[in-house]
Image (cartoon, one colour):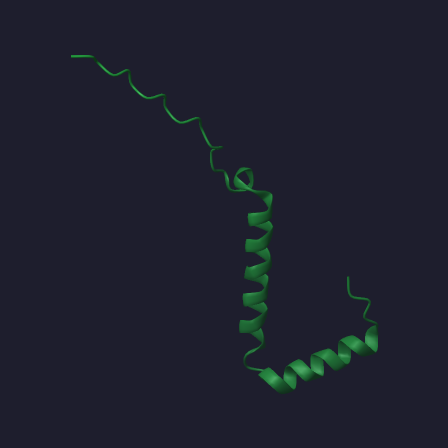
Length: 66
């Protein structure tokens, strides 16, 4: 992972403030949080969303000979 100290985080936040501005920070934070949440749900698989596991397909019906 990232091994950032205190000064590195401060410099990073100042750069983000300069690039995006104060008004857009809540939007960016919400988007990042939503992305992380969706990634975690997707990584859990179908069981995490409450979906059913894949069922076996139905067997084909027997063909009648005429």
